[in-house]
Length: 133
Image 1: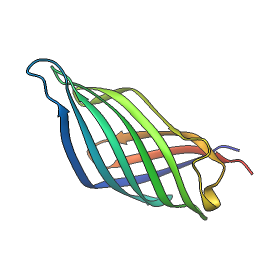
Image 2: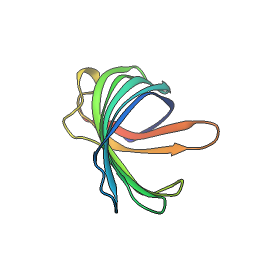
Image 3: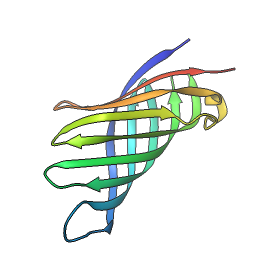
Image 4: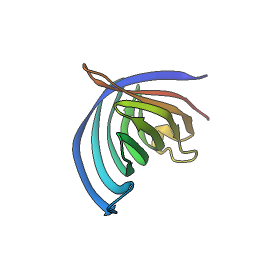
């Protein structure tokens, strides 16, 4: 059975450094990011993002993020991988999934997909998941 949860999140820490800054072309960076999730998911996230800062408002990222806390009545941790292309302020070609085998404790066996949405009111994380027994 697939379950959908939604939670708001806040970025509480963002430490970014460039590792390739050519005079022309895309710049490459790494960011260590910490998040707090509130709502149907009560958790903390710790992510490493690899970023491409292209020219003319084009960007992209890929991330691996460990989420530790509670989904409903279940507690534990799991890892998601997510990314997307960004044109101006619009995220396109985004993806996100739970890494199979990454769940711990009561979240062991979790599988699913996730998405992110940012608007003027809040940042929202949506997780469609199931837990295999």
